[in-house]
Image (tube, rainbow, N blue to C red):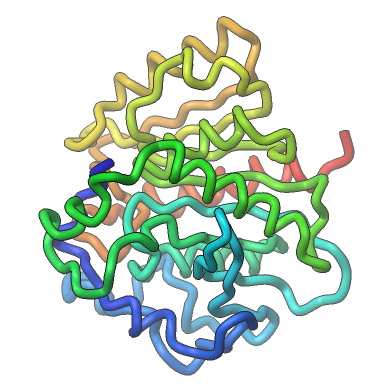
Length: 286
C-alpha cells in the first residue's frame, strides 16, 4: 500500500529523530526533532518544542512489539504522578516530520500522554524518493497497518502512567482514515479525531460508535472535503456523535508547520477545538 501523503517534499532522516537508547524515554529537549521549512523558520505559533513548559513533560523514543517485531515510536507525557488519559497519534507520513512529535508534546502539555507509532517501519532509511518508499511498502496491506495500530493501543494502555479506560486516537491524512478504522475495531478507544482523513467508506466504519471530530480544509487538493461531508452524514444517520469543522481556504496538511500549506489561524483554531473535544470525552465524568 502506497503512502498517501505528499511525502516527497518532506523526507527526513530517521536517525535525526530516533537516536538514543532503546526501550526508554530519551530527552530531546536540547535538539530539534527535524528541520522546519525555511518559510516558517520564525517559530510557527503551533510549534511548542522550544517552550519552557516542556520541563514539565518527559518525551522521546520508545519501542513496542507488534507481530513479534520491535517497532519504534515517540511518546510524550506529563511528569506529574498518576494515570493520565492518552491519545494515539497516527501520521500520514514517517513520524520524523517534526509536527508529529510536536503534536505529541502539545498533547502532553494539555495533560495527555501522546504516542505515535512508526507505522512506516518497513521503509528503510535508504529510501528517499516516493518510488523507493512505495517499493518498500508494496506488499504492506491495510491489515498490516491496522495490526500495528491495534498493538499500539494495547501498548499505550499498558503503560503505568496511562488510564486504559481513557484513550483516544488522532490521525492525519491516511492516518485519519486509520484513526476511524482503529476506533471501529478497538474497544479501548473512547474518541476519534481526524484531520483531512483519507477516503473512508461508511461500511468500513459501521462499528464506530464513539464521538468523532473531523477537521478539513475547503481547498484541500489531496482529499476533497466532500469525502468528509459524506462520511459525516453517514455517521449522523447511524447515531454516531460527529463534528465536522471546515476551514476556509485551508489546504491539505494545514496544521503541519513544516509545510508550505501551513495555515496558522486555522491550525490554532483546530487545535483548540481538538483539545476541547478530548477534554469533553476523556476528562469529564460521563
